View 1 (cartoon, rainbow, N blue to C red):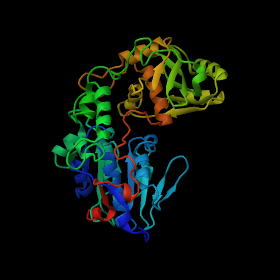
View 2 (cartoon, helix red, strand yellow):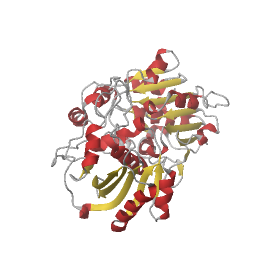
View 3 (cartoon, one colour):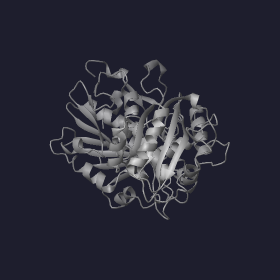
View 4 (tube, rainbow, N blue to C red):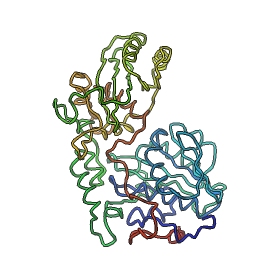
Length: 440
């Protein structure tokens, strides 16, 4: 690349469904697997190779919600390409990768699809495809038809976790419109070696999944099964006082403070006071939970709380524009947040996972009885992946904060290939030279 010897550029050697994704020429292709199988890395490798191997390629890398890109798939792509002469433009959010050969890769959130719709693309990589509606996927595919393409095989490709048994990805594959591939943990070279033997890293990470996943998440993320959700949305929540989720914490341990709010009048309006410690663990210290309050009255409460704490941001239901305006008029940094419920519940759920040190990344003061009740009672509509509206209010408030901050949850981030850009002398048998991939 740019005069550098390609033999010094090494990439992970994938197997199974991940390898099939890299070499697939199908116009629509998705690889599905549970957590930590390497699928996001494989998709990023494919995008990198497409950009490097042909000049002036025009590619996009997408996710349903733009705010989730930077700490998920772009973090993987940045790790993969560290040290390569790729220009990254943008401020807090990367908005373009430019390669020396004139190829570009543009991150796009489908909640703001204008950038995607304004152009034709040689390829589009979609992260967490299961978060999309089929209409989202078809909209993306309509911008990747091959018109003016410089690559041999224009494609829309993606990775996904299994979802419900009748998810549109499965139905589209059955109709023949989409190629569906399956990967397993044995396809991840960080977890299993070429001979099929589990590595020490694999033992550690699979043990973590085995001991923390429950219910439908266990079926999907550990056993790679398409399964319909049943029961509690947050079935990993423990309401026992003194347990991993409900206990007191010292406010002095917090380094930053937030508010988060769910709008309501007939339903309760909710305000939560959340502290974040130096490890970015969140603790809910205080709740306001009451129906029958106007936006002015709710803002009065928020303003009173803000006077006692230095509030960095107040994440608010994006549909409540007048509440956001009322809060801003009082000097509170209120941010309206919008996102599909079923696509973003995992941001809160993953924070509830108890780590190896016995601690969760989201905890509650015992005085927050209504919030605790919501987390105990929030449930799926029978036979669907859609949460019911009842007991959603405090859960939604925290979901808005999770979307706004877009922080790693510490639970199931895809760490599939640790140290992807390391020296040639450190590379074992599960790595290939860049040249070996160029036949795609």
